Length: 304
Image 1 (tube, rainbow, N blue to C red):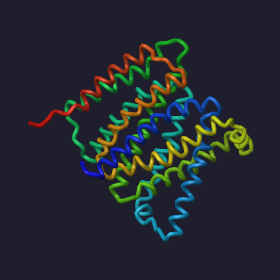
Image 2 (image 1 turned 180 degrees about the vertical axis):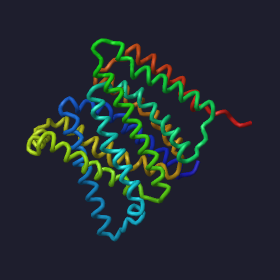
Image 3 (image 1 turned 90 degrees about the horizontal axis):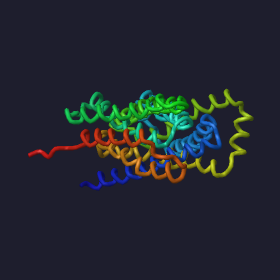
Image 4 (image 1 turned 180 degrees about the horizontal axis):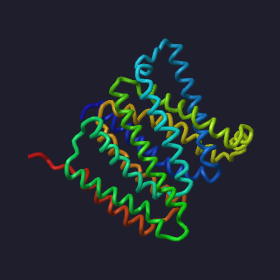
């Protein structure tokens, strides 16, 4: 194994740990602040950091030629990955559980694999197609199960929003891979994305809550919820996005997405022991179907 590939693997494992904990952190922080103020506060922090990044680079003589040449695709990446995907995730987690997120989130890599086949001509075997179908079946069953339970329409809405979140997030991953192939630096792409997010979300939050009321919500927030926002802004935001895009320089999109399967290893224990969520029969049933699909989709026969 080359040192560059090993470095990419270590980056992606770190990202899996950070993003695995992100769901429980968001769910916990939403106990103290609504989704839109939470997201605007989080993007205010990330946006300021990103602006400082570009100012420092500009003063050092950086021209950002690649970024300017491919600016439309970079802005599209920023819109999909930050205001749209993150906005949907925050609203969804306000209505559903972290455990549902861990199961429904498994469909993300499947979407990316299909997208990789369309955009980058990655080959999908019959075994992978069968596995993807089984995974989708398990995700759909788990997503729509609340409709059969009285008093669960809000959770159903949250699960449906999670599916839309995954579509937006997967689209951003594919665009990021294309951007990296066009020699756009991952740091430039990531920081532009947070500026785009701040430009979209902060004015929206001000229009909904009013500038003074929004400031009061943020200033009076208890420390434990401030820590959740800063975790999302610094670790799950700037650091994790940078590492994820940077890692794709040395490995394929389909291979990078496999590390997303590690996220439940970190998310499920936190959901159970920190947030007090419980494993339902539907969760276990859905997890079994999804696990079967993953085994079929990711199993590789040795070439004789």
